[in-house]
Length: 339
Ligand SMILES: NC(=O)c1ccc[n+]([C@@H]2O[C@H](COP(=O)([O-])OP(=O)(O)OC[C@H]3O[C@@H](n4cnc5c(N)ncnc54)[C@H](OP(=O)(O)O)[C@@H]3O)[C@@H](O)[C@H]2O)c1
Image (cartoon, rainbow, N blue to C red; front, top):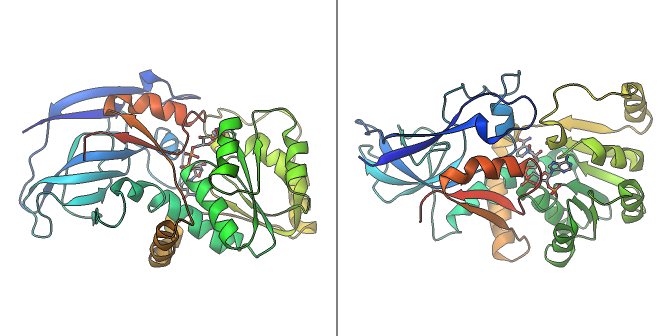
């Protein structure tokens, strides 16, 4: 049996995660029993939700135990099979976590066709983040031609898909991203109508200039200063799919300052805003529509995607720490083994 390498949760972070919150362990790879397969991880997806799994605070999913393997989606190869439905060499979408090998009884595995699209896309534009963008925008955002759609973390797998779908629906797409390179990419490569750098001074004024007709759909990925700039620009009947709040994932206490809840609720009432949170699995029934539409748009070159690839499982903690600070540029993936 090969040696397994695993990244374990060593301690729960208070505030931003740091290298000491992770630990690399080596053990013998597990042996599959009857009805099981041994999976070798090829690609590990790093996603913002993993910060939530490191915390014991109540959420929509259970936390990783201290000492447990960090949770995560993977594209894996079947390297030994005692399961009737899987053969050696099959490529599957799995939740094997931050480790080089894992056994599975087949539950939740999905076979991938490497001829259809690069297999790593099953973790990005054709996977959970793409589905999040597609379903949240369609179901809650309900964009109509001629409207203005704003999204932040706009070069990431969720935000970049939201903006490009908004364009395909005839909307004006405005992206907010960290840094000039990311903003240039939004305009030059993805065809956004405008891009605003949230690291540069004057975010509120620049966003207002980029949205001369106000904002009809704000796809909320971040919260924080971006939300404060967006809020006054919301039009009557604006829709706000609340997908993520990454600016707050490391918060340890509520912010100082006045309580703005009455102001928020007044706007909800007078502007008749729709603010609705969602978790992608709420819309699982839309998976066939998502797969059909986004695969077609990809093939037609109507949707583009970008990957940020980190080599080696041992570099996953540092890459994840960077993700929460905007160091990634595109869908963050770890190449754990060569395809
Ligand atoms: N509800 C669901 O089911 C669901 C599913 C998937 C993802 N999500 C959420 O969707 C959001 C985007 O996910 P993703 O996978 O596409 O991530 P991503 O964009 O690849 O990475 C996160 C990005 O957030 C931006 N960011 C970090 N801190 C920020 C801050 N303080 N202010 C503004 N931007 C900040 C950074 O981009 P810049 O450098 O451009 O600032 C960073 O690259 C996250 O909030 C995630 O939790 C929700």
